[in-house]
Length: 113
Image (cartoon, rainbow, N blue to C red; front, side, top):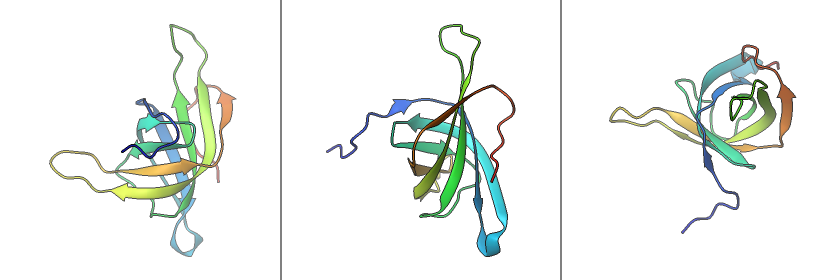
């Protein structure tokens, strides 16, 4: 039985994220989204924040239909679960998005804390 309230869309987009680790040390990582909805996302990454961690996320949305403008989704998020997979699968984590902030541009992904 599907419990999600929002439709997930398969989307492989570059993602960067940052958070404060133990003793307030800045931590960061990057990855690729597996899917995204209005309320959450799953990100494949070698670096996974802990469950319940609050992070800042920056996802690059490439232009559709041959357009030239790119959008960036910038928002806070809470880590819901972390998956350390085997059998050649990638590690990753699911987040609940705190809102949607869009910015225009295609510069390198960097999350500012």
